[in-house]
Image (cartoon, rainbow, N blue to C red; front, top):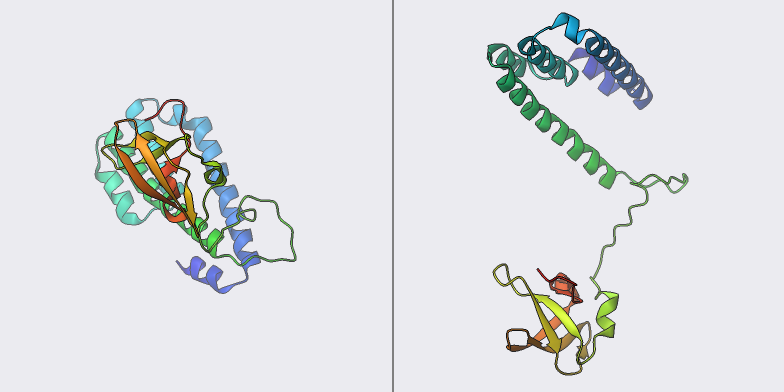
Length: 199
């Protein structure tokens, strides 16, 4: 806790150096652990115990988690408990990285080709997919009706009418029903060209 508070008050460069040293130390501990696991822990029970504690140590888990690990007597239950605790730690770390990547201001001076810098989030009014402009009378389309019916295939019965940003289509579905439906950009996920095998 004291080291962490000192690191939080210092420059990022020092923080990165400390993180690198911690990672190197963890890698060295893991390497030794892996080499001597069979010698130190000949039976499966001892191995489960050692692996659970190593995972708790490397993840820097709280003392209450470590106390629970000590109380558990079944090695498999102990490993399950540790992996569940690790999922929470990893999930939070992943969420923090994602939030940081989204909120990190873009520096125009540097050119980076990593995946995060290539994200191009578009904000604004949704648009119809390009294939929507090619819809004509007689074409087959699929429409997602609801969770019960799923994707329903049908034929466009009249020339579609475009009104501003939506297309009005009269579609006769394979069950014989005919409906006049809007194809809007907001609901474009409900429409698709016919698939080879419908769901």
